Image (cartoon, rainbow, N blue to C red; front, side):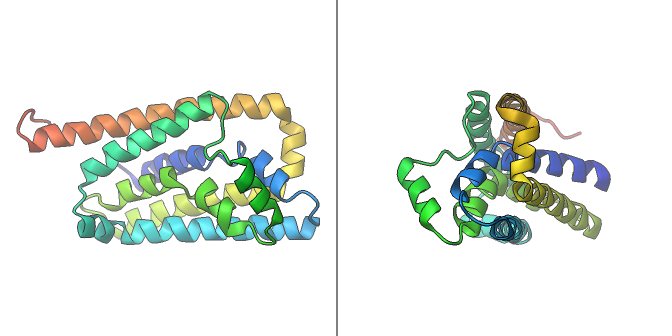
Length: 216
């Protein structure tokens, strides 16, 4: 797999999982009444925190998995299940993280919502962490691979920043119907990514158990 191909796959997966367009409504709601300058600050900090979380889990992912004795196949299967759940939720018209009324009220009352709930769990939630963990433990990782994946994480967080920063404009352009349609499309793509992760992980487990032989 070329670095460009790797970048495209990781970026696409993170873009769909972070779902910046689908989360616009939540951002607009919890920053309602704030100044435009404050909203832009919150958008930038949320994207920065999200990048930090995803990057740390990517760099330290191998050691995290080794510490808990988790294999890459286990991460792909478990992560695939989590991502599939998020995908089905998006297909049903739900956000990747649905806030309860209590959570929403607490978020509205908070002065700084950039880390919680925006960065965690809305953007860098379980699905995003599962993606970076799954690529972190690949064998024969070269320096260029780290660069391409880090660039993909940065690009996904950059899109989150732009969407949140221009939330009012984007919401008006797309409208409720447009945002709903995009969310459902993202949900379908996410389900496909999840199924592929589960297939790959299951194949690895079956090969390890000697049931099938996949590698040539």
